Image (cartoon, rainbow, N blue to C red; front, side, top):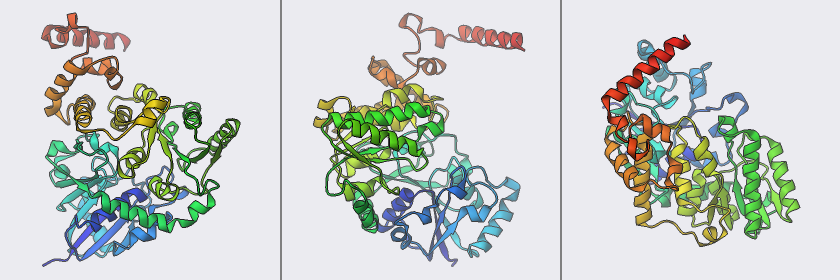
Length: 453
């Protein structure tokens, strides 16, 4: 009987904590060895701390027999850009088995996102290993970002996810019939409590210690080209102004680790001008750790998963900013952030609406069902080739629910390309379904292309 080894891959402390919670909850069978493979996917890994260098990691590390570096294993290749060529897979598997002392072990994998590296590379490397995918964010409620090759997709047995929106079922990997299994909230909260205890000094370093400040969560969307630096800075400034308008005089800003320091200084100046005090922690911590250490009176963000953990797991008041701008700016339409932005926009109160913020509660079953219908339509419009079975649901939703408000979640050009309801005015609705018109349109595009050439 061969030795059994479970290999867990994590690129963030949040992901590693999710795996720890799943292990604590008994969601993985017993094994002879459990290895945590950490991967640093930063553009320049040498300048960014790896998961195992993050404060509090030692509390998560206890669940694993050994911690290994994927970056070190495949150096000098970058984790996000490297995957073994088909002809080289046997050679790489022998190399990794020897390096990691795997011998002839029976392998089981737990990875983050199978359509992309480094998760895809690991799945290709161990060709016979069953795969569990774990999702630690709102993207699990959207479609798989790209088609997953059958040799990988057919080996995925389940999707482990946090139940961030109770009653909402993830769409991720449903094209392979993968069942979603929630990680128990209690287990996740327990892991976060351990991390918070390890970060006891963080609260003492904050001048806002002892109060219940408004916690502002920054995202670095400018790095993705979604917003300009100035626009994102304005987005953060609107968080400060909105929180102060709601009566908060103590603010804590948690910036993205890669965001420019000058953004924080601008926020401090703006808060001071409004008669408030804003502080920035000396080092980054998980938002969930900040919830436990600070118990904020309000959590403000754009579309971060942390907004849903604050509301759904910790019962904290939340508010969103900037989602309308992002719904307009995200490109292409199938951008993976579209579903998280849609969820935040549809469920959470706008910071500018004081009545909505103060009176907001977690949505009930009817509203979650409405959101599920919306996400099926958005998901199909994003990835029609991945989820062709959702076309009927998309047509039904668009036929019955398109309105000046719901149009924000769709693009007419996208609906037109897919011949979906809402694509063109009703009197011209026959055009997308007319074969002759489509043929003429293709011929016109071909002639235009030749003319340009």
